[in-house]
Image (cartoon, rainbow, N blue to C red; front, side, top):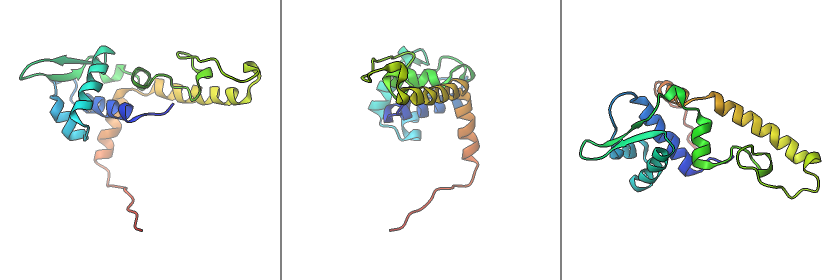
Length: 153
């Protein structure tokens, strides 16, 4: 699994919406500016998240987006699978997006065996973690001193 920019932006936007849940809708421009996500790209992502059942939208002057469910009920795995597809590092170990592999014996392939363990670890963790966990982590990190490392050349 590789999280693309689209996946990262989706998670950041949902985290922002999760902070204000269950209040009213949040305008797309507010999310865009706060999370430094290009507005046009965010519109596409939020529309995709709406069709996936993660957010609801309201049109008009007082329109915007909000989570369609409580953040505690949304596993990170569901979000990432919807946006990115398989959590598996290679297609032949994916449970939801299986792809036939090219090895001579799939049952005896050492790479497949190891990658299946990797998939199980990643999927297990992402199934346990919810959007609420991400929101809580974001809130906790907001209050910690910056640990950014500055590099000099």
